[in-house]
Length: 214
Image 1 (tube, rainbow, N blue to C red):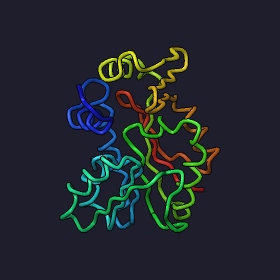
Image 2: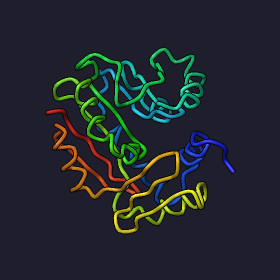
Image 3: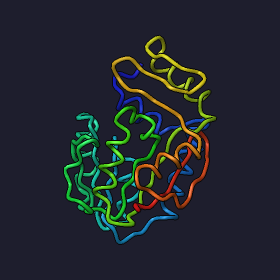
Image 4: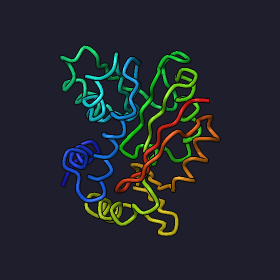
């Protein structure tokens, strides 16, 4: 049994199966196809650095943040020789960056599904640090992801989570909450928080979005 959330996610992301593999592979392709390369990038919820590894050869500079100290330490080690990458311990609710500092913000791997009650605050911070008309890439669990998600929770958190089968809302005791959203639900959330959705795809367990700051 894995001993930490970081180890669990690292296993899931490096060796994804089923709908997770399809979603993460499609997310990577979507990101690269729609990337504006001459920009400074912020990756929120960077974990051990999956997105940093993909994007660093293609962008001017990328900063990864995570609120998990263990994840940040691991990512710093992995990227210590990459001058384009900086990794910081930081909470997405209080981004320690200037207004309009980034041309692109990414928040992938379904991370926004875990925002819970802090959702609007985090989106407000993302919009603040983006340039006007800056790009925001994000992904959430989609409305058909429940079976794959339950398999995941049963494997790693059996007996430690509660599930609302009608809404797909999951709470893992003392760790995190997780939700799933249709494309229309997520488009409304993004629009209400000041983003214009430009493109969206559904792949595996994920709905993946490219939006622009209004």
